[in-house]
Image 1 (tube, rainbow, N blue to C red):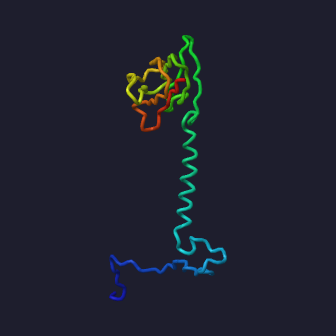
Image 2 (image 1 turned 90 degrees about the vertical axis):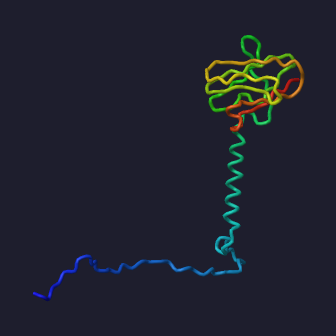
Length: 164
C-alpha cells in the first residue's frame, strides 16, 4: 500500500473567479459634452460639495442664538426687573436685550451651571447650578454692555444689553 499517501498541512488550491471592473474610458475627454469634473479626475466637484455643506451648516447654526443681532425688551418680573433667562441649552433668552437707563436686569438660572459677567468687568456673578438662582445688575448709564457665561463662553453663550 504504497500508492495512496496523505500529506498533512496541504490544502488543495481552488480557483475562484473574481470580477474586477475595468476602467471605462471617458467618452468625451474634452469635457465639451457634459462630462462632469469628477469624470475628468478634477477635484472641483467634491470641493463644491464641501463648500455647499459648509454653507448649509453655517446657515443652520446661525439660528442657534436667540434673536441673532435683534434687541428685544425682556419681560418684567413682579418686582419690575427685566428678566434674562440662563437656559439649560447654554444660551441666554433673550441674548440681546434693550432696557431703559436705570433699569435692573435679573439673570435667572433655568437649569445648568451658569453665571453672567460683563466683558468690561462691571459685574460677575458666581457660577451656580441651582435652578432659580439669580443675579441682578442696575444699569445707570446708556451704552451697550456685552456679557457672557464663563463656563459656556466657548459654546457661544453670550449677549448684549443695550441701555437707551
